[in-house]
Image 1 (cartoon, rainbow, N blue to C red):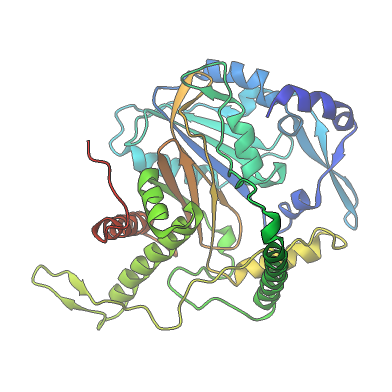
Image 2 (cartoon, helix red, strand yellow; image 1 turned 90 degrees about the horizontal axis):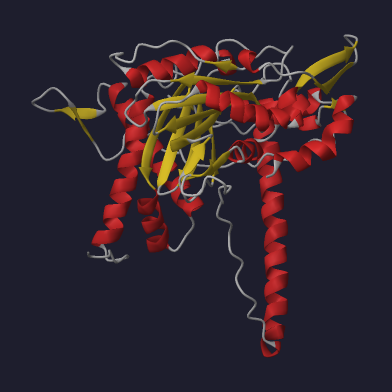
Length: 432
């Protein structure tokens, strides 16, 4: 994405104010104030002056990052629009003075990000900020934390915009490239046209059925279908609680190995890992919450049985249906909020660059985006970068007090599946 071309095409409309899109207004609805947190780990310490100079020439020139939200009208009819304003980077870039010898830097960064989310962004300024933490953690030499209001765009678009501010480490002039799914070459043969015709009809009917099934499930979730109550399901009002953000970096090559062994997709693998990790985690929780959940060993620990999870708990999905054509925003917002309130968690994933990139000359070690604000206690996000996959968790610590344990369970699930694929001979490992 080239920022300059987009700015020229949009400048005139932004000078007079641009109405918020229905999706943007939805993210400002009462009790659904959603933010994106993008944590970036760096291989070197961050020079704030260099970052400010770079943002001045790129991100700040984008209309959305140089516009504030203005509310016109009265209490009965409020019109929200984006209005261009002068950006003072000193108001958006925060560089706290930190002790480089702090005892537990990883915990400090987690607590810092949680504390940042306690206060909303100032509506008198563009709705974004960057925190620069020059502190060494287990995964990076320094950490940058972007906080962006979700009304400024969807997660994939904003991550793409941030990546437009980076360059390949191997070629400082080249933009990063993100892999795209290759379309299979055309193998159409006129002799097979008869079978292709029936195959096309079959695929179309499957599409219609799956769409109908998704809409039906969504409506049922709004009306009566509620997830089974488990220790990880948040109570009403969970969106108001301060969240905790943790991440774990695993091997993308291991995930691809499982993908090839199962002849499936990376997305299928990470969904399976999420389900397996949650099953292991819930098994721990049910053991510790039940006197008869397991057998006590000599060292005092509880030996787990095969499964302590109540029957009937299973993974299901809900596809959010487009309600943007509905009159007004309050009704669709209430519907989506009710749907979120009836589910346990949300999960998503974004494909990242396949080569190492730098953010204004600072090589990036990992990317860990997530969100907070929706009425759920757990969000799991997968972000690929080079040969790594970052698992980011946004949790309500009053519901999930040990999120690192959940990360351990997801990581352990990957190891178990990988080892099983190798032991069964489903894949061949290269021997050097």
